[in-house]
Length: 359
Image 1 (cartoon, helix red, strand yellow):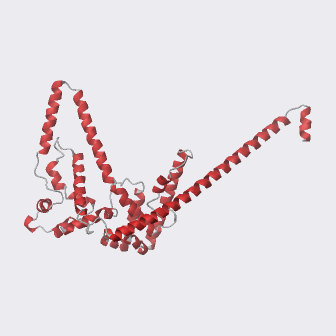
Image 2 (cartoon, one colour; image 1 turned 60 degrees about the horizontal axis):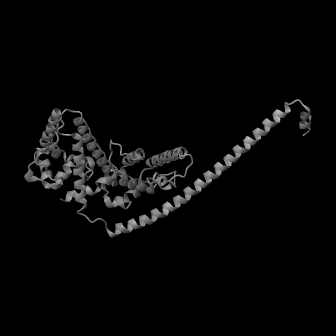
């Protein structure tokens, strides 16, 4: 199905979709505000609508920033300055809590990966490119974290069940075990679930959700009907919505045997399955992409080297200033002690006082 190729762009495109959920990124607010102002610009919004994965990967979309209206560019400059200040405050707080111990430079650099901190004043093409690349990379780990959380949830649920059994009498324990097995069998007894993304699954949505004749199924028409925002791509919510009919066969919130947390995990796995299946139909990379990536690695290595040198200079300067401050404090203490000594001797009424006054 030709429309399935549009799934390829879903991840990067979803960065530009307005979402209600927190991404979990430490720069979530900055990301959202940048997207919000870019979406307000008619030129950029149109380019975004027509952009594909190659445009995004090669930085073509980021270059459209040069044509964004001045008032939006000014606001982006302001957002970047605020983000730089926020990061500086975080780093200072971390430095203070570690009591001036050596900081991990690599960890420090990662805090700034989503922007060009060498230019703290204006939001440029490089800043947008870094933001898109960083968010894409970081969000790829989001589903893995969800899977890990689900695994913990399942283990905790089973642990609590076994603990309850330990506190029961032999008779009650047998009844509980029997009920548990009955619920498992009841949950497994459901209508056939279609393969995610298969023609059978899509035809069923076409027939039962859309109310259309399965004999008239047309992939292009189906795509247009379920591309709810009309941007020419399936974003995450649109893609996951396609699996609702399948999940309803297995899960019912009113049934004791059905766990809605497990349903959402299954929805996520269906989405991943379709995405992986779609990507497997295409080359992993082109020669041009490989050359671009190798150049990116070379540039990245050069940038890291420059940043490390700069950070080392800053650290040495801070240490020099701290040493100077410590010397000043020591000098003040010595002056204070001398004045105290002088005052004490001036108050002593003995022959030594006159001698001290002569000095």
